[in-house]
Amino acid sequence: MKTLSPLQIERLKYQPKLPKCLSEGINSLEMVEGAATQSVRDQEQIKALFTNTYGKPVVTFEHSGVVKSSEQRNIGVILSGGQAPGGHNVIAGLYDALKQANPSNKLYGFLGGPSGIIDGKYVEFTDEFIDQYRNTGGFDIIGSGRTKLETEEQFQKSLAVCKKLNISAVVIIGGDDSNTNAALLAEWFVKNNTGIQVIGCPKTIDGDLKNDQIEISFGFDTATKTYAELIGNIQRDANSAKKYWHFIKIMGRSASHVALEAALQTQPNITLISEEVEAKKMSLESIVNYMCDIIVRRADRGKNFGIVIIPEGLIEFIPEMKSMIANLNDIMASLETDPDFVNATTIRDKFDIVENRLDDDNAKVYNSLPAIIKGQLLADRDPHGNVQVSKIETEKLLIEMITTRLNELRQQGDYIGKFSAQSHFFGYEGRCAFPSNFDADYCYSLGFNAFALINNGLTGYLSSVRNLTAPANEWVAGGVPLTMMMNMEKRHGEMKPVIQKALVKLDGPVFKQLEENREEWAMNDRYLFPGAIQYFGPSCVCDVTTCTLQLERAKELVNA
Ligand code: FBP
Image (tube, rainbow, N blue to C red; front, side, top):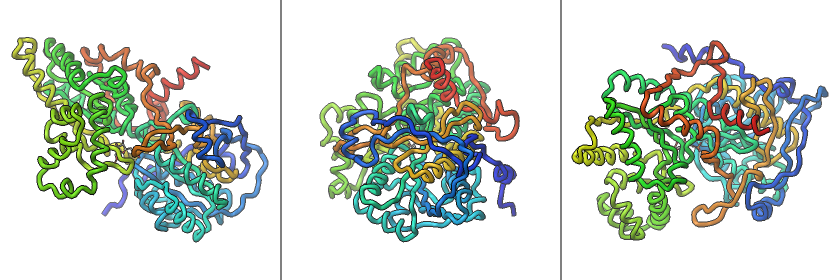
């Protein structure tokens, strides 16, 4: 019986590329410090909360030519939040760097996400164990979880586990929330003179952990290419059969980066961007009208088919929905222990309880939704108190509303076409794919570089690898203070320090590319078919980065 697929066997042999300075030896790096930094907003509050880790400089590494000795260290690593292709390579890069620095160094992996460090559940990595996971997708090497690491009790327990294993540094691989927790833990460890360092690595397929210092989070490259392949295949099917409108919801909890990138790679007929919907204050009705206008105009040309891309988080950006969901979140928090709600025997009873508590306008909006969506809005919140948007079938809601509107238009004599729709949700399909060469190299470099930051005594930093549109040997490795990316935001009704999420910039080059082309793509089928990710072959096919990175980098160079 086969235990590995042919591609698995080949990918295990792939040697990820490193930036030149890192490839020349972990013990011969020189750290170059920039100027002191400050947080992106709310400087006084962030400074007061992070008295020990605030204001540190951005650092970069250069090859010094002088080999230094490196003291023995034990390090712990945590995978946190949703899966993203390349997580295994971050750990492999970290492991290889620490073994290169001092072969007696040890790496422990905490199991099941942040809860592993609290509960003392771990595994020690060996060559044999780690070698099975090189260049593979998924987080199954140690598992992941969404436990928030933020209370005094959790920090005390984590400290006890670190002391038991003689761990002097922890690497947290996660998104904005997990790295916010990394910043809190780093500060707490310094404040309590534990000597334990904390370094973060920027992970999330959503692509919203980025800023002036972090060009992109890992996983975005592979996930968007995987979705683009699937969209391209569906476009080919739609263009062959010419009988369906395909409504494709694309993962990305809040920001629309993933949907936008997938659209640029495939050029579908309609792409909704949540940030634009919010900025233009588009109601659900006006979104439906915008889409119907294109459907009607295409039908006039005899085209009763098309492709629609919908970002996963859309519902929370539609003004009336946003207000209703915020109201609903508060109500759901208060109903968690309410016996009438918890013991309600039918979903109808739950709807009634919720409707009675919603403010009048919000109750009207809630009431106007189909029962299936009303039910999905009542599903459990995530640990941050948010609606789990991946569980809300916005694509089906839009199909239902568009069908109704098209029937009205037909009765008025304004629509002559046939409307038959298929719905899809691409999310989990892309989160654990084999990492693209870009993600394999980027992740390995991020992990390798995380050790360089530890080796140079830093804490409260995010591993940063930049200049990513250039070949890997020209990438620039260094670190960014986590506090530099923070601001104050309301969470669970209280103002908290958090890493700022990057939403799609409507005046940025990536959105502009869509805006300039969407009418052409709507009416004339300009579908692109990216095909499957290629791992072997010419570098113009295998190593090419996303449109998002390329457009943003080109703009940066023009402005420089
Ligand atoms: P992270 O921000 O933790 O990387 O997770 C992102 C994500 O994949 C979102 O795109 C999606 O909404 C969410 O996770 C789904 O979460 P779950 O895996 O818990 O269903």
